[in-house]
Amino acid sequence: MLQKNTEKFHKIITRLAKSHSATREELLLLLKNRQELGQEQREFLFSEARRNATRYYGNKIYLRGLIEISSFCRNDCFYCGLRRSNGNATRYRLSEEEILTCVESGKRLGLQTFVLQGGEDSYWTVPRLADIIRKIKKASPTCAVTLSLGEMTRSDYAALFEAGADRYLLRHEAASEGLYSKLHPKEMPLSRRLKALKDLASIGYQVGSGFMVGRPFETIEDTADDLIFLKNLAPSMVGIGPFVPQADTPLGLHCPGTSDETIFLLAVIRLLLPSVLLPATTALITLDRDGYEKAVLAGANVIMPSLTPQTARQAYKIYDGKASAEDTVQQIEIIGERLKRIGYEISLDRGDAKKTGEH
Ligand code: 5AD
Image 1 (cartoon, rainbow, N blue to C red):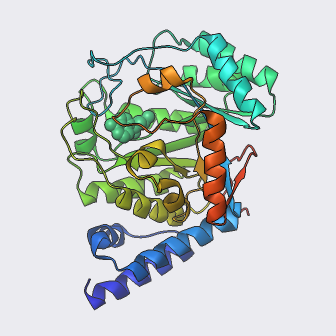
Image 2: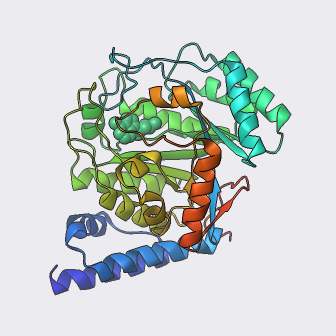
């Protein structure tokens, strides 16, 4: 990289780390020069990101128990293996009892946050979901329930919040209309996704959003716009992970995103939103065996081990090659050992989001 750019880069990171903001031009410059960055520059970015994460969360990494409740989906997103047009997908739906058993086994391991994730499955009506949320909350009143079940109406979100749900994950996927429409069918407008995110926040949920890294058709301008979107949305959580092609989808022949870019963006997001809850996602671990360590050393502070029963876990095939080998006890042991080696440790606290400025 040119000396001039190195200096500019250093200045942008320094400002980002201090003021937690950057202009679109500055973000574009970072994104454009990412691959030419020297080791020293990258390490500077990561150490600033780590410093910010540590300021809020110390050396603690929060665990969330992920329960993939259904692989049925009424949507037809071009990138996702669960899309309704995928005739090769294995469909399953956990029973209420199975879900409660997953929660129980997570509780025995000390987990205090349960993420119910699934496709948009018409079986899981609001009354059914509300009922199971109430049951989880009754059995474990201090735990947090996170939902990741796609788009719903405001009144549906409100009813689930009323039933006890605390948090909601809904990635915006792409802030630019152009890119969003290349990844989703016509009947899924970006406006509906944005309204859903607004509704969730106004109801009182801790909201998570995010996007896939290395999406087909994306430009660096799109990624800069996603970063600006996230900065303005100021969510409690941001989930990003590499795009991983799924062979039975229309985008199945496109190249995957990279671990390098994902880690770079994790660090930039940590600097833009210093107190955000930022997971090292399964998609990243799928692409990079050292993903946990690299993500944590770039400012990530959440890991989501799976509590989904093994057979269902295999069938929940959003993308190909999904990492899903060990049982939950082993997964947590491995995570703990790996974190220890880099000076971090697991926290079993509920891990609610902190506001920027509140340490
Ligand atoms: N690769 C990586 N992530 C994917 N998702 C869906 N399909 C893929 C894929 N092929 C992500 C989307 C969605 C989340 C549940 O999983 O961003 O929001």
